[in-house]
Amino acid sequence: MNTPTHILLGAALFGKKGRPDLTTAAILGGFLPDLSLYALAGWALFVQQVPPDIVFGRLYFSDQWMRVFAVDNSFILWGMVLGAGLWLRQAWLKAFAGAGLAHLGADFLLHHDDARPQFWPLSDWIFRSPVSYWDARHYGNIVAPLEMLLALVLCLLLWRRHQGLAARGVIGTTTAAIAAGMFFWAWAMSAGTLHSHG
Figure (cartoon, one colour):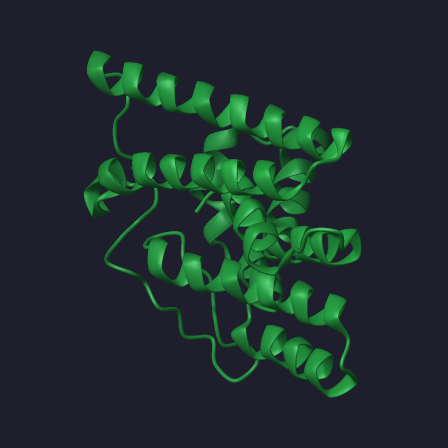
């Protein structure tokens, strides 16, 4: 699943009207499992000037990168964070961990070749779902538009929940970007310009 959808899902599930602390925690929890990818890929692409096909075709799958991904994509570690939130009775920590676990759950179901270790440090085993959120060889051509539709529904839900000008500005911008992505995807598919990866 794409990072913006993870963030929207976390905010929708674990944010709350009138509680910006919970919504912020949920947004951060929805984003954090992808932080290492942005950091590693950003450094490789923009600092080291590594070509994108090497970054996403080779480095992404390297043992070094997978060891990093194993930490922020571990059901074990995120479960411990949720346990701490329950033990300490901290609503913000529960929202943060809940959004992180929702992110991992979606990725567990929607990543095939690009799946990451999910049960570190107990195991380096990787579950590779038969369904991919992007790869047409694994139903990505069906999942991708469904994900865009889900993202738009989440934007609408959050728009109705949050009345503040700043929140609505962010939600409105996100909705416009997702809608533009949907139109581009539909155009590219009809023009035959989108093909499966690898």
